[in-house]
Image (cartoon, rainbow, N blue to C red; front, side, top):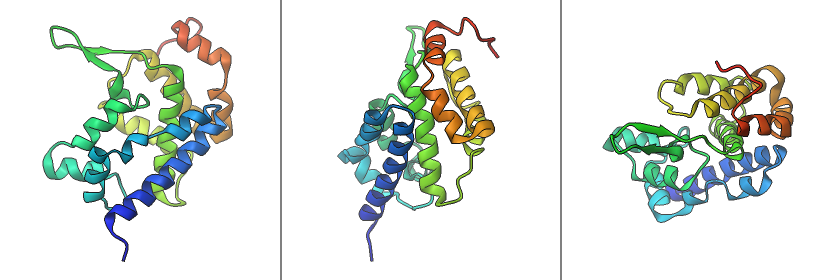
Length: 188
């Protein structure tokens, strides 16, 4: 029988495969190839293999058991496609929400798609990114421009499908507007 280390390795590779496919279709293939390499570090791999279940992230299981996850702390600190990477603290302790670069917002959406496909094994649907966006909305701390772009991408997937997202993600005018501060878009 296969041990948790091998099962975890196979799950990570399946996730990486899906994320790479999505990133490649969005024009950021190299980024997709490098996606989540930190999962193979000792800090992340050993902990995740220990808490492996196969149907959800082992990070959640570790947090339930211990109240925190060193693997997650390591992961979000080494992967700029996670919104937590872009939070800083002012000297008074208040949060500073840094605007994520466009390519990392695209990768974050590709990560959500890849995780959904890896863990839902054939049951993934194009409304899942928007469901994830809404479910996590109150827990996320994003720069408002980053949040708007993330919403636009998730809405596009839900309405126009993945092909619409791939086209939109490669849109130079959208990227320019995002990087310029949404001069032509109404803030929500």
